[in-house]
Length: 152
Image 1 (cartoon, rainbow, N blue to C red):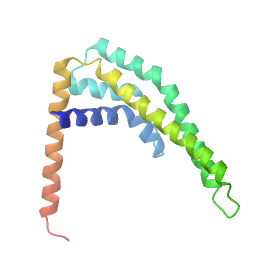
Image 2 (cartoon, rainbow, N blue to C red; image 1 turned 60 degrees about the vertical axis):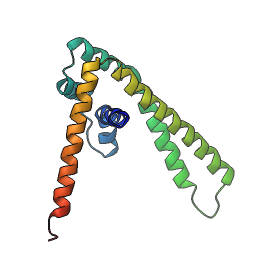
Image 3 (spheres, rainbow, N blue to C red; image 1 turned 135 degrees about the vertical axis):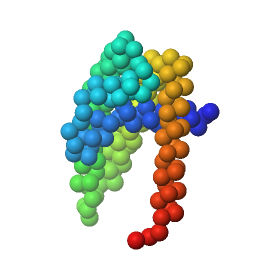
């Protein structure tokens, strides 16, 4: 049951993180409603639940985006410090800040997932876990089939 719980958190985080991942890959992010709608279809969310989740996403989105931009800036600064005239103190200072931001972003992500999941009923959590298990089984079957196919 603990594995299923971890997987449900992973799927939930993928659904919620899709806009950020799309943006990082240079794609146009989908409006957040698309992810909420997808989640609503998966576990039959009520209109009230959908609105509550949208509110949570709206509330946390700005802070997450600011931190992502700061992380990107720090990474670019660190990349620019590579060379024969490096300053170890400056590198360590920026790397420490990067680590702090990464930790904050991880905490924000977990808090976002927890807040969204707290909107679900127990039945919806169970349905999400069931669907995740089905998807895992399908993926395992596909991987086995691909592994059994002769190399071309």
